[in-house]
Image (cartoon, rainbow, N blue to C red; front, top):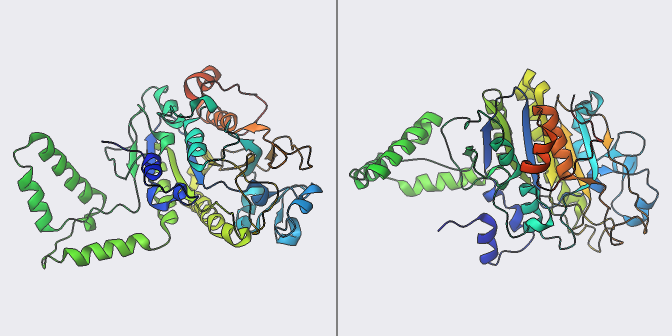
Length: 408
């Protein structure tokens, strides 16, 4: 029986905020596309606080809402345009802003409202559906994009990882890879597999293909275990999985594939659920996000000029800080746009304000942009997709505003 990541966690009773952002459940997905442009979609799992990452310090109401979560120069943030400032945790991205290769879509949200569940929010974010899509999510909007483009094939013939990301799940063929998946096979294990499935034509072929695949991807993955010390091998694998830096390996692997035939990559960065001590809690996520973008730029070289990176989260956070110097699940948030193909140097969107009357339900940043509209506009600029396809097959029910110019 197949069971999804979210259903497994729910059935196991792991409904806490950290479960939906587990780093053990975020494989990476790739797909080939017959265009020379590249699209990287990063899901920021946990609900990134857009008001802290892209700080509207020019709004006089912000200070009263967040007495300990300082903004602007007082917080070491980098000024963007005299109204917004970029959190100091992303300060190394400022050269991209100066070159017009970094931008932000503020007060953006999916159609998801009010319940503020990580699982439902992420489902709708990756499915690209409206509120009526809850409970009937089957595929993701990136996969639906691939389904309407002729000539799409998997990047190569591999499929490795615990599961596909929902945003790339569907009828179009894609490839999967996870940095924490280990394929070490001792000689003894290999012989046992070959013997068990020798007379089964289906499984014998699958086992042979898996062994061959492990050798092709990394010959060191198939090790000779002369002493039969499987326990020691397993311990080494577990220790390797626990070491940090997985986000760097993901970024490097993505860049390597994007320099070849891959045109679409999607993966997650976790660590955005900042209920407590947000000043400290936000550092890890920002560091991983900054590393990822800078690695992509460096490793892609000239291909960076053809690349758009779109980072999005399931919802924003409350405008007011809570009693533990953090923020709770909210509504409007921020999207991060980077890459040489992005017409950046701007904070896109009409600012809704932070006064009591301006806030959504008196508590959240009021959304003025639909995450789907921003994503569709980027895809239209990169791949020349017709608006009717974007509003129909890819994002059913979306009405694009046509007001944004996000790509060069």
